[in-house]
Image (tube, rainbow, N blue to C red; front, top):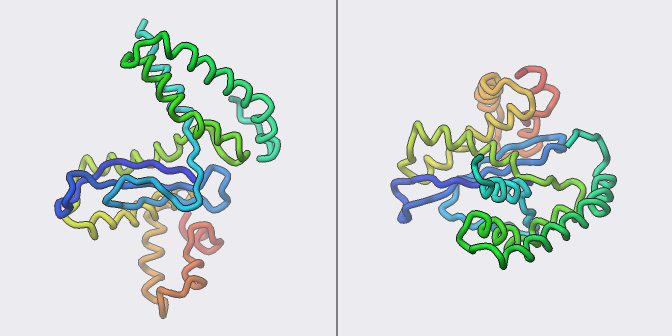
Length: 222
């Protein structure tokens, strides 16, 4: 699962900042989902979850420290895990040893010093990608998804209430429709037309027929 967050303003909130989170299934998911969730707090604690560091952030830190002057191979998750443990794990050890060696020779508040500190402070989470072949090296998928909300926020600026902020369910439907190759407008119209005719909205089995990857929805909303 990918996750990212951004700040959000709710006028009735007692705190200056609240937060919007986005959660996404990974690229390999047969039923891809994008979910936006508003929360008063920034805590990212999830039950029975292992935090996996984003290597794009490591690369970015060192790229920013530079003065201003992978092929898509189709392999199984198990093969990917074996290759990572064989080839990537030794490179990671070499990289973190290099960071430890040079950190002592770098000013802590310089950009390079901060890059070293960031890498070493999160060394354990960056190595978690070696635990499972399904895990990916970067969290770019979530960072791209959160931009949808950020761009919208520039227009509507804030929400009056927490209930208003929770209306992000619309964004979840739209972005999930896109990930399943649906026309978002057609999908929303389909839901608004069909759902009111259901006798109940608490029957999970009945509601599952409206999920974007079902044959009927795929046929009607592309």
